[in-house]
Image (cartoon, rainbow, N blue to C red; front, side, top):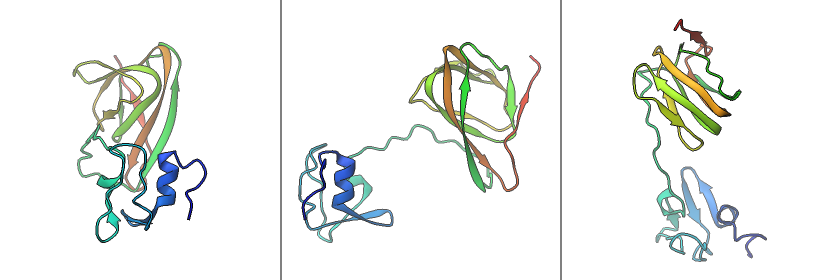
Length: 163
């Protein structure tokens, strides 16, 4: 069986090379073919199985947010766009909010903790009920994704605070 056209792209080649089996992958007999990335070859075990650790990819923990026992029924994801220099003011959410900028940058501060500038590739966590002192778009504006873990029947809510 020949690899699909364009198989120099690792993701497409892996799709051809591997059969999914839950969280593990089973290598086809031709799995000894070099992937052309990383160290070269995917290690195939005697039983023909490999784990995610054997694949030519890395996984890096960038956020580990405690949700204080929240029973999560669903997660709502919103794309939010902010005009340049828009500063909504201090606010509080009724549940935790996690997110990441995908364009532009924002000045971020939880309560009186250190202010940081968030850019694409970085992540943030707004704990439920805690004052978000700054989430201000910088000169170029910002677009970010927000993830709202919600308990059964809960809707995400934001309350603006008097400064």
